[in-house]
Amino acid sequence: MRVIAGTARGKNLQALPGEEITRPTINRVKEAMFSSVQFLVPGARVLDLFAGSGQLGIEALSRGAKSCVFVDQSASALAIVTANCKTAGVARAADIRSGEALRFLANIRGPFDLVLLDPPYGKNTLAAVLPALESKVAPGGVVLCESEREAALPETVGSLTRVKQYFYGKIMVTRYEKEEQV
Image 1 (cartoon, helix red, strand yellow):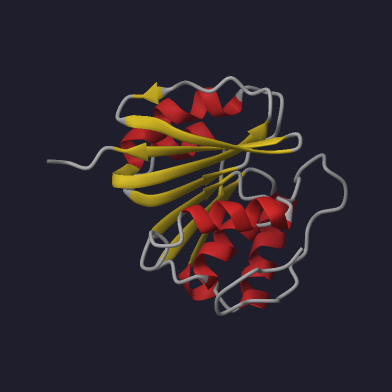
Image 2 (cartoon, rainbow, N blue to C red; image 1 turned 135 degrees about the vertical axis):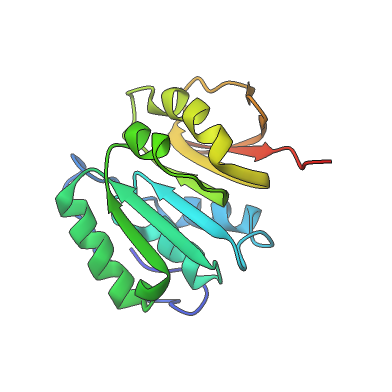
């Protein structure tokens, strides 16, 4: 697993062994995700919820995001995120926090320009998290959700609208956008 583009391009990142705690995003999916938001990333405030290894948030920081809050409830995962941020040279822009996703969202203000969600598959986590997340997304912001292909995700969640779904084998990436304020 490596950083694809930006200041940390080519840096190898660590992941926890097995897939019980983390399941790293494959490079082809990560590249497609970031191609779809390439003009939003520079200067963006990013949230990497369910951070795992931190590779998605690190990719955003490497591509010019202003800051990234990494959240995971696994201490082992957070240790890997910390090490990976140092390896990639993005530790100064990283805010690494321990916590359960819904509890974290209840206590954070935001707003975030880009939210990256890659929760454990098969637990309907995205459907539960999206309503709590909606008010934390900046106007014009984007939420990218990685899930299993069969996940049932809503068309809209408050002011978030599903605008696109991409399929990569057994993986689905869903893009939500928040309405711009008029």
